[in-house]
Amino acid sequence: MLSVPLLYFLGLRFYISRNHFFGQSPHYPAQVGINGGVNLSTTVNSQGTTGTYSWSKTSGPGDVVFSAPASANTNFSSDTPGVYKVKCEFLASGATSSYTVESGEIWVVGVEVTPSSNAIDGTTSNEFSVNVEPSSLSIDSYQWTWEAPEGSGNNPVVNYSTPNQQTTIVNNAHWYAYPDSKFAQDTGFDCEYTINCEITINSQILKDVTEPKWGVYLPTPAAKTEPPQIDGMPTLGLRQVNGQNQWYVTGRGTLYRTAPEIVSRISSASQFYNKIVTVHEGRHVYQFTTGVPVIGLTLHTLWDADALYNDVLSSLTSNVSEQDLRDKIRTEINNQNSFDIQQMEFETELAEYDAHTQSNAVEPNYLEVEVYLPW
Image (cartoon, rainbow, N blue to C red):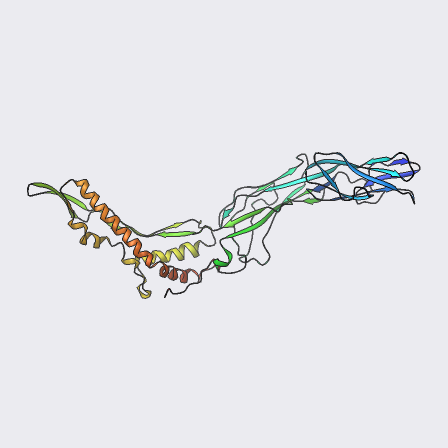
């Protein structure tokens, strides 16, 4: 039993211990986590002796709680890190003076984990760290841990770079599915791990009792395809008409249809990069360039620079200035781009159906969308 030095009175022996038999060597200091419990007991070593007990704090930075402050056996706890000592006062029945015995040091250990900010799937996280109070404690070891909800899909995992050090990062953040459904409408695009660090002090394992959380997510949308545009400027010339300067269009110049562009918000290291960027958004590029007329998609026919030039721009003139003619041309180009955006929106649902039929067939089999022909 762990005990402080004995006090002798009236032929009795009175001592305070924590979960050990009398006669064993002392095991103070005792370590306990925030709001954790240390079982303390007092013993009057004389058969049949009765009396009253009173527990109180003698030193330490915060408030303490005794589960049974008037009993020989009690549980000590505190929510403030620091070094504490407590005492128990015993008044034997019929006695006029009491006897007090004090415990050894009880270290209330505060373990605070500071997780990284939430990370996008496939990226390297910012730093995770753990702080231990009192700061004077000697830490024997660190062990970073993680948990995901039971039944989660897509193989949850947290790959710590240095799992046995005070600070660490996570390599290749990994999104998991909870509940385990392949459809994005069920799982959403976010997941959350419980992150902790187990510290060992004198063979006792302590951790952050708040169970810190860390999220991994995919942006929504994770990628998008910017549609083509008509851009550039025809070549211009100046001539005399009825004795006045007239600026007119002489040729197509640099007028052209830009290429569709994929804008990705996830890195190529993401497990979903191939599914979302390469396949899904790549299919949108195909729709804009080659087209899928078999299902009625005509996106490849929009933003036709040749048609705009032949039907509209080639006949524009200005009697004011070259800049005036350029402004007229730019207005017509902008009008055509806006019109084609509206036309594209009529086909968006069909375009998404076509792209999802391609990407749903690609692993991982998660974050998928149920697709139906929009007619």
